[in-house]
Length: 171
Image (cartoon, rainbow, N blue to C red; front, side):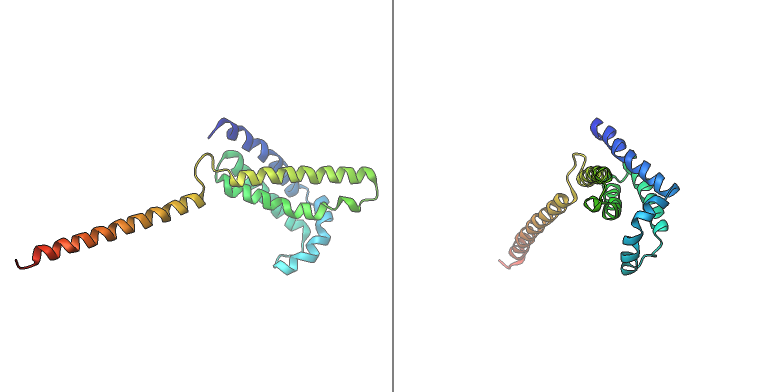
């Protein structure tokens, strides 16, 4: 792992770890903000309409995925989980333009921009292959190699079949 990744992953994960711990230990402030969204969407996707429970669950996901990402274990999967964990809170708290108080509006806009930055970092982590080829490239290469090998084997089989016929012909 490069020095940049060794430093950047824990730095990015620190925000998720802190937010996850806060959500698990003190879910009520976020649950109050998320309650209207949870009550509207949870039944439609088969989740319980308990905002506090869902906030704690999201916090647990952030803690686990943040720890894995910080340690460099399953970094792409954990980054996807971290990115996904931001979406509900951004949807619940993101409508800063509805605020009447300019100071509150400014604070909520700043918070939304911070979360957007974290989302961008998590998405970069999700596509970071650490200098190794990605799964798409590996898959295309495997298909290309398999096709070449199959064609070579087919040619060799035809050639060997011709030789075998020629060797068995009476002559």
